[in-house]
Image (cartoon, rainbow, N blue to C red; front, side, top):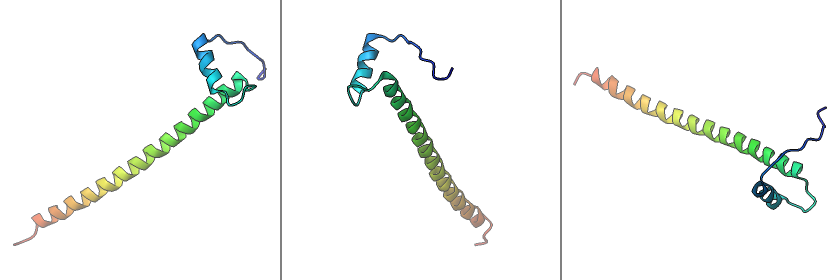
Length: 80
């Protein structure tokens, strides 16, 4: 049942957009859609990696600031 062929309806402008995305003239719409799905998944992974990298950088910066404040708090106890 997984390989059953179905028919979908799309607007003419969407069909033309899919035609422009074809890398070769005999490429099927299914192949174009599969390529789009793969690209979307790739972009999703890359975005997630960039977000993680950004959060890690923010965490490092926050830790640095926290340590700077800890030094200032220690100075309050200092007898001049």
